[in-house]
Image 1 (spheres, helix red, strand yellow):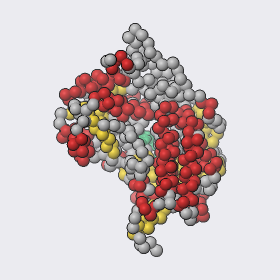
Image 2: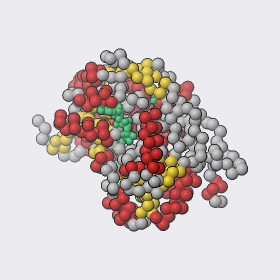
Image 3: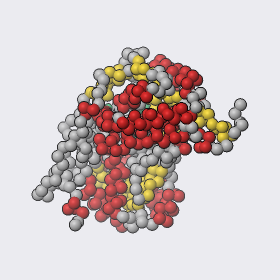
Image 4: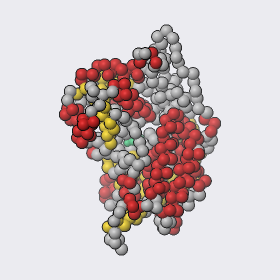
Length: 500
Ligand code: NAI
Ligand code: MG
């Protein structure tokens, strides 16, 4: 049977018969969203000093979901104070095996309430329910399980060193994987004995606030985790607070650079996980059908709002035309629309601001000479949506080949030799991830050695595991999250006997 016969036909692509999927919406009744949320400080929800609130909307419908407190300088100060008291009084002195019990409890609660978290993640952020249900929330729980296991074994993670927590960790996370980023930051910090002040992103605060409720339910001592919602200025107040002993940030390179400057001036250790412009490299000897799936997953997963997204396809010139044809055919079957529908592959763009940025960069790409392909799929009347896009005939100098789009947009470039693929892949200010498709193991190793990327996937893409360190080089930031490496930034480690 030819491949064409087994692929469902997307709307508007009918060849005389229709295999359109019937709607399969996940019920939103499993979540209850309050009209208003305060800041989570010292184990309780508190009014912000300023009295200011901001709206968080569902990007799929543009409906307002809730009003959320905007934390000011004084609020951040209260949160850091609570975290300090919890560190000195409870969490710091607590034996690792006792801390582990709380982390295991958090992980189990996340699993038990997974559906509620997944639906809320999708409502507030726009990602398809099949991703929040199958990827975001299970991985968030997995991170808590994983780090719970380390809490009483820190001396084995760093043999020959005297390890100690750093104190109060200030953590700022983005909107593309709200719960996953929360888990990547909070789990290792707590396992290592630190307390936390976390600032979620302003378009996706609701799951972090549900997490605050979960922390109340598991009886985490007050002040161990504080959650201060707000936008950039709230984040800035946290970065600037002299009571913060360790900073961790995931987000844009511009904000990351500012945070690095402040941290350096104050001598505060910092880890930064910033943008990317990954090369996804396909050789002529690759398993082509699998590579097509890998490339599609690599860029359209989570609407392309992924720092490690395979946004630059480098395909060997000999197969470029037929490979791009296959990609287009596959893209025509991708289902775009209601993120709560279980069949949806590409959901809503996270915000109108991000939609404007994606639209602008695609226009720039076309003006620079790239060839545009978008499937002829219908888009919902309301909400922020963007057709998955392929830009072919892209040149190295095009903005679309250099800047992070952070949207469902693939730029296609070609190469002839492995050397040329490496040179082009590395010709970027970023260095987060890369993908290689070839049947030759030796070629994979040769390439992986030469690619400036923190993560290299071979014959697969977007594989995440809590035991595996994740992080970048160059303008993609530094420091690693996940694995033992992810514990290190939350500990100071002197040679045994070196600490007084
Ligand atoms: P952003 O860097 O402004 O936002 C990320 C987080 O930082 C949010 O919680 C935000 O409130 C906070 N923030 C903003 N300004 C801050 C400041 N001065 N001090 C402390 N915290 C601050 O990113 P934005 O504007 O939402 O997205 C812009 C671009 O950044 C995207 O198009 C994408 O290219 C990139 N980005 C990369 C991410 C990644 O995972 N590496 C995540 C989000 C965005
Ligand atoms: Mg929202």
